[in-house]
Amino acid sequence: MPIDLRSDTVTRPSEPMRAALAAAEVGDDHLDGDPTTRRLEQHVAAMLGKPAALFFPTGTMANLAAIMVHSPPGSELLVDADAHVVNLTAAGVAAVAGVQSRFVTPTSRVVDATDFKRAIRSPSRYTPPLSLVSVENTHNGAGGVVTPLADLREISGVAADAGVPLHLDGARLWNVEAATGVAVADYAACADTVMVSFSKGLGAPAGAALAGTREFIDAAWFTRKRLGGGLRQSGILAAAALFALENNRNRLAEDHRNAARFAELIGNAGGASVVAPDTNIVMIDVRDGSTAEAVARAAAEHGVLVSVWSGRRVRVVTHLDVTTADVEAAAAVMRTVLVRD
Ligand SMILES: *Cc1c(COP(=O)(O)O)cnc(C)c1O
Image 1 (cartoon, protein in one colour):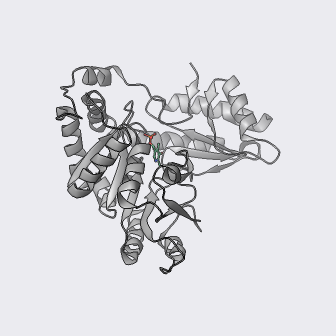
Image 2 (tube, helix red, strand yellow):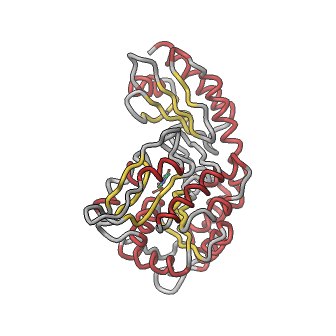
């Protein structure tokens, strides 16, 4: 079996998780409700300190639904150019929501309040009205980077000053909590709406939740329906998410330690440079003259799978299906490859 470090989505449900989903009490969620899904939604809403939450099959759909509820077609979304919601969703914001994105370039590792503020234009007859600010925490493309609570509060202030809501793409907000010791609810309090994922570091097979006011969630239910995301016996998936929250949330720090260990072992092998990880994602920029593609291919030949993030950047992600020993073995392979290829 190769050591698969391409993503924290590659985890397979453990036997106890499979037992939990097999035992789930279910109903027709789209018709009159699924009891396990309801329990998950209430649990997540309480954890995030929001009045209501709604289960979605994917985080991609949850983010898109949030944007469709907040932003009328032809209005503008303020977001960083490398955000998942605009970079990795087959142009859903443009093609499905009909919303124009205005990209903010971070001056540091990730966008901050000053970056957002600079990008906000005064309303005019020529420009689309701003309808939403979106921020991603942790930031995947930047390498699992944490936006600390104080920074998120400032961003929240900028959105409020502009008179628009703030959406938090918190697919990996659980990792932010594990890295900082600050509760997810404190981050969620900065935003009007929050998406969290169960299928990343938490290790559930699928699913995400969107949280906000009851009125917002009612509108999101309708939009989820429109997008074809109404599920039937979704308690099967919700049970896995509940199991993951109960059993896998408290071990995320282990993934962070493994990522730090991996980064330390790579150092600057073969002239590569490693972005020191905040959480469970390690970005490696390969040396001049080499390519991420070549490095990933060579690593795969030696049983280590990593993703090609861009021309010269390789992404490595630790997760609950790899041990410290696996990560050390993978780092040894990666070192050899970086020096040689
Ligand atoms: C994975 C991810 C999503 C989408 O979640 P899916 O369940 O895979 O659709 C959204 N935002 C971020 C930051 C992600 O990493």
